[in-house]
Length: 215
Image 1 (cartoon, helix red, strand yellow):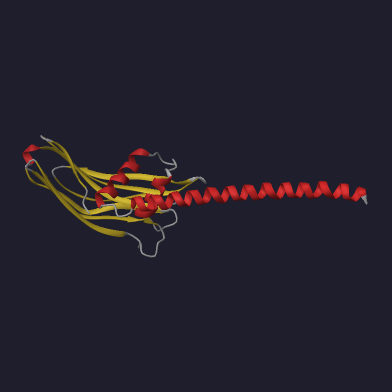
Image 2: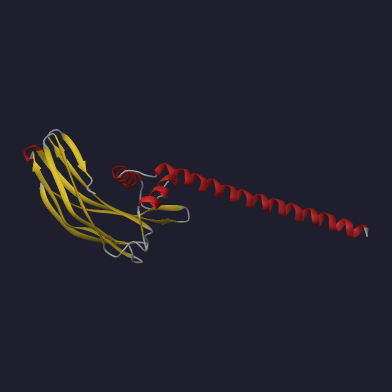
């Protein structure tokens, strides 16, 4: 009987040790998950109700700050999830077209832009973006203007390894001139979860530089 007791006690002790360590590990993982979720909720509150200009500014920063395949910070991942277009969403159609327009006057120079930008991110691998009849016009102060560039940017985001969301594609189409019309489509291949397409007009003139982000 003593031998059985001696054998049983160490066995129970080992089981208890394994159980406690497994429980501690599981608890640690759940604690980490809860911390991440709490942090994401804080970012969601912080990023809520951004203006259109603030949204575009953030997309431009992400466009310039990260390389393809580089994992975004948690805050930037939350921003993309909140403001980028989600692939395969019921509210998103194939070849989605958006009419945009905008104008700005600085130091006597007035530039206007209107037309359409478009994208298709609903296919499994083949995606595209572009512009249709996107007209840029310098309607005042043309003699002061040295250049006007109209560019349509498109960034696609997806799973990067197992670490999180990052850029899987980044591209643009553009034209230069005081009075131009941009109609073009660019195709690419990638596994896309989110994407964004936007237009920026950059005006260089004798008094400096200004931009227009038509909405």
